[in-house]
Length: 262
Image (spheres, rainbow, N blue to C red):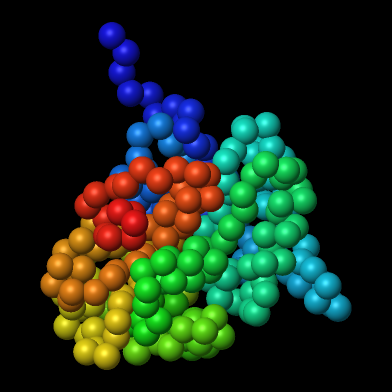
């Protein structure tokens, strides 16, 4: 008698994630279908994780991405994703495409490469929506929230509004940039997030987009979709869905939003 061992014979997916975060792997393993495995490389660099050359002819990967490429290369991966919303936002126009080009060259042929920015855009398009209510993590400061709104406008969407999640009174004296370091990343609760999104979503929004791969939320996607009667896309859900499609896997996954059933 054999037991499930999470062997990725159908697809193996590599993900670059923030070095101090536990959410991406936890959410991916909750959602990932049978016969698909997930393998993480951790990144400690500042965002964006690849820097434009002075002439903007391309990008130079941070050392952690180069190290991860060397580790991923012999693993026979189907797809690799740069799972970092902030990098896609701060990289600016065409950053995602430049990173895909550079990583593809480093990883060699046969591996599909994507980024969280490209994944979320593809997820919204597949869901047939264009006016998302964008929800940002509490550790995004004012400038990053503003950059995020500009980024989505530049991608051709028309955000119907946005919200930065309020993590509660106990965190109000902590600057956004310190929240994760002071433990809020581990102490995230999804029930208050559900209440805030449900209460704040504007009528004119045709969808909800929850940004941030370190933002715990996939456990409420189905509930929000039922109550709001519109698609709800999250960063990790979108990246998993896109990587599965790029890997040729179309196994439907229930319980985590309609996107994974498309």
